[in-house]
Image 1 (tube, rainbow, N blue to C red):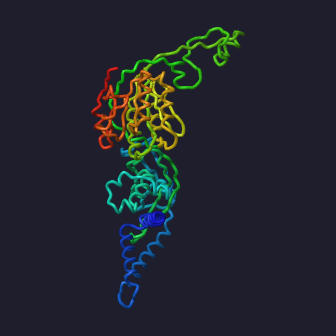
Image 2: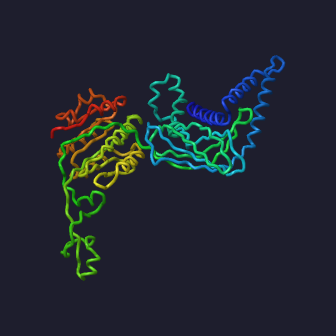
Image 3: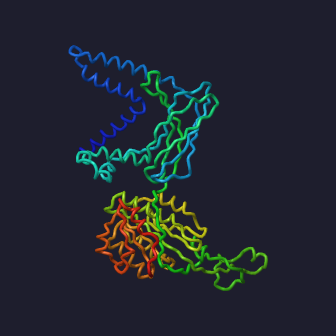
Length: 457
């Protein structure tokens, strides 16, 4: 009950503070605070003159607010966004304003707004914030800083207002803006707010222009080393065609006469119509290197920060695209089991990063689903890199199955302690160098230490 009351009060306080910050200039906010204090101390008009200060300040603020009703700009707005952004890297974009009115617009302030859904009561109660470890006991118990952190994370970025130059009638103006993305996924722009202070410089007149757009933010990336495992070329039934599709299609080789038992889908209908007899397409199979990248999405006792680090490590490794004659398969479990392939013209690394930008933790089901996905494609996999959130029995079973199938494995365990992994290497006891702990505060340093890996078979 107490948590619910705190949540309702925090939500009201947040909305009030947002309104005050948008409407009042810093000077106006100071005068508003002074008026509130004067109103409190001036209740008894016989013992203090504070009520006179209260009346004077309220009168000024009311006049300033009334002056805002004259603000009627006629402007067209266009936002110029890049295709992608990346967490942790400054993102530059622009807003173009065109004055369609009959008079110039001056002293304008432009604020871009992002959607920021307020956390639900359940999210306020259950979500964990890594920053709580640095906060005092009171803040951890009350939870207001954590709630504001949740709001900021849902928004995805902090956008600062920008001052526009004088915009003459019929003239365009361009504002170059920059912000730092705080999370991956889609940022949803809501509207562009135009504001202008009143003649006293206390109250802002606002006009919001709807401008809904989305911008995809890719995961943070690290400098990843070139990791070489002793995988061999594997037989790929169906060759390159089958590598990117489903079914029994194969690499086209030539045409030949139909033989009993050939599938109907292999018939070349144009040749059939021309020659008057069935002709089928003949295919060949291929051998090439196909490396697997497994992302563990099963979030149990781990923190969201560990999951985000795992996604970033996977994205960093995907950036090291395979060679001309190799493929890279990203395998993970979301709403279903996924395998995404890049290399040899089947897809670009940007496609894989787009997918990783939208990956969410998997909180239902068992880890067995991921193990089965990887094992199902084991015959085609030359080597495997596993980005794991833990090193428990289920994860060790995945690695063990791949090793028994003759597939070299490198396991990167996010947030693990190197000493604990050394004490329990599991199926990698004979190859401890292939079991690597990536502490959250030393991921880049650990990746740098990996260097170019050339493990013995």
